[in-house]
Image (cartoon, rainbow, N blue to C red; front, side):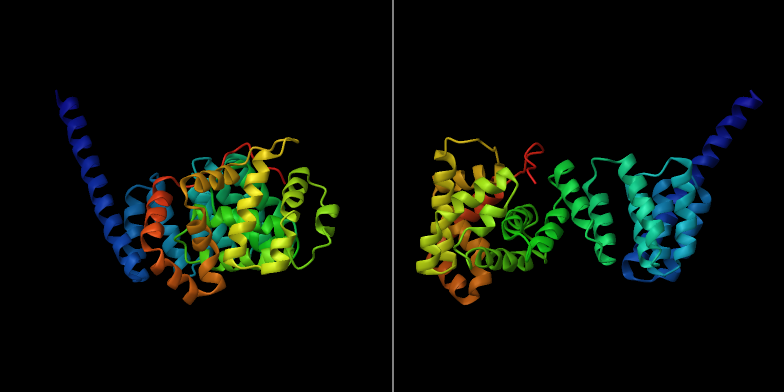
Length: 331
């Protein structure tokens, strides 16, 4: 009987400790959100000491140490979890961020490679490693961004970086990756930057009507895209590269893409274009995609003149967003 009572008392004590730890952790997080990192660290550290096995407590304390630029302490804390094999993906991400902030690039790269091996389908690690390599001006960055696109096609950031990378190298890939990015993350503050790149990449492509880009392209999917796009040279030559002309060019491109009887390449982005055409929303979509970058005032005037049409498009766009497929990586 005494043993039973002792077990109950231990259980009650443990429950009380757990509740205290949660309360301290929540208070510490609130201080961290407010930017009071000193008080946040004190409370988060107390919570961690009460339950050192709680991975959430560990991550939040390490994140607070990162904000305080206490990089060595943060890494020491996270390394214990990583080395013991209990770390989740966020643990690796925080550790990588701290290594990078402390300019420990070799350690960060090794950590991301380890994370990729443990979480091969997590696009964030490919993106973070790519950004780390880009920061060091290493061209291998694109290999990791594209590998992330291939394995985790719904993770947007890899498209953002790949689009920027190809802007002045291969406009067609800058266009494809950029358009996918703004569809996946349309409300991100960086989306306007990619919309600028999109229209500029079309201008770069149509600046040369000799089709040399098409002739030099070795990728078969890109060959087919460029071959169909080159058929619209006359429109670009006559009307220039504007939102209006791009709507015409891209409409003809999509119609010819699906009429083409040569080798087929399933591609959800082009399926999305075709659906928008059939629903009567393709002009509004192209205005949304290019209009504000070409001429913000003209875009605002267009949306006012086509208020109902544009409103219906936005409702459709939110209800039926573009979703990439995992088996459609062609680069």
